[in-house]
Length: 244
Figure 1 (cartoon, helix red, strand yellow):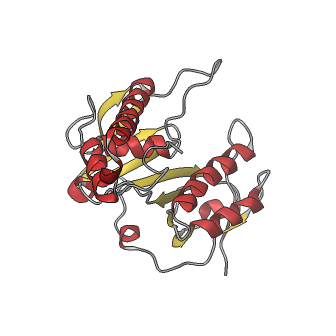
Figure 2 (cartoon, rainbow, N blue to C red; figure 1 turned 90 degrees about the vertical axis):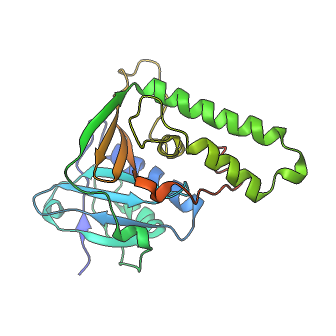
């Protein structure tokens, strides 16, 4: 029997939550048409965790969405197609229910998720400062890429440059936190620029639990497990140099 869920309303209306998740899923699918997400909720928790892996060197992106209605009590633990979930969320327009897609065989990362509890705050930073760090790193990547002679702009050279940049420590972020998580948060839309007239940005929190570190903003989190993300970052046109 299919599980049907409904999101709790955001102060800005039900459509805000649906659009937010759709944007997140849309980015994952644009980067990888076969992308999957892990869905997780627990008894007594009226919230759904949506985990995905963007192509930024082993980091995991996390969205936590409040649930309401009968489905809020459901225990969900499934790996599903991001594209199918994106289509299904379209059913929820205006606060309606959506169906959790059928489970699929997931990649290895879907079985090794960040812990639910045990997180401790190790640093807190202004969102503006974190955005500036991301912008400077992206600008440096572009500048150094453009300075390469054409015959040195191959995949290996770009991958090496990306690895150098995103392995740098985040200033003020605490031990083990690199620009890799900042870059992923930037690309995923978790660090949007504050619009004129909006309230002040929420602070960006850096959290740690065991071997995991996590950058948490008001729009989502990016988690990284110790040295697991220390290699494997690859570059493709429009991916690393573009924040969306």
